[in-house]
Length: 77
Image (cartoon, rainbow, N blue to C red; front, side, top):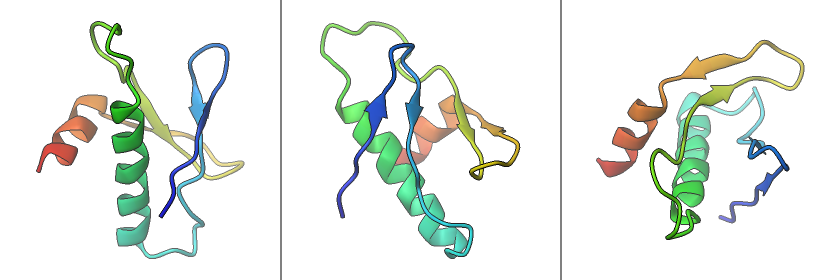
């Protein structure tokens, strides 16, 4: 598929990864594809940690913090 995301002026990415009716495996795969695309789009001049934090939420629901280091490890496997 195609991964599209935009970055606001503060460096925050808001992107959908699916609907709550999607199976868990599909949501996880979509989220991993989004993170992978963001990491691949990292400019060569960027130094240090590129992903500082990751939070997942439904449209109007509370956010759930995800360990950004863990997200990067999942992509390597």
